[in-house]
Amino acid sequence: MPSPATNLILKRSVKPDLLAHEADHTINWVERFETDSEYTKRRPLAPSTWTQLQEEIEAAPAHLLGSTNISVTGSIRLAPAFLTGAAFRMVSGADLAVLQRGQLWSTSDTYDADCDPIVEEHDIGYGEDLAVGINVTVRPADFTQDVVDYLREQNIPASKLLILTPPAGPNDGSVSDSHAANALAVGIRDALRRPTRTTPRIHLFLACPMGLALLLGHRWNRLRPTVVYEDVRTAQGYEPAFVIPA
Image (cartoon, rainbow, N blue to C red):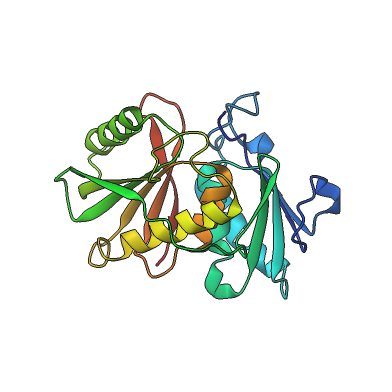
């Protein structure tokens, strides 16, 4: 099931609360996304833009000054979830928690060892940037081909595409709980640090649980500036949503 439209609710608590009126800060873009169905709202409806949404998400920490334990609820697409994690990045001292299929996933949960992803490399040859696909939930051949097609059709200046998947491969149960999600998020970040050390930019494509996107953004440090793409289900497949500085 695709992530619904963006309705981001933040509370000063490690226990997520589904009631927006009890939130400390709310970002509600439901009416500013295209289409009537909450499950097909995938892009801002003009004149609203991704840039405006990014500004509102990045301003959220200022509304929660002094808070170190923050719950995230609402209907959040993958690119906004990743950006929310990055806005409250680990180096800021904040911890985030989110409900994922009835489980509480928290950035503060520990794990025994990093989960090193499987990395596949595909040549693109269009420039010096690096494209990265995180695939946890989609059939591998389909996801890889969709990203490759987009990169080539849009002339994205990437030298190659790295596809990162969990060791057991992409499937609905490949990330079992919060501990596994944190271990995989750290493993993905660390696996990218050396390949991206000299690249000008990262182009990031996500096919994963929303909770993992949030945790991954939270730990996205010591990496290059990143363009995060959203799957908008149009003829072109994706479109750039946010640019996250290094």
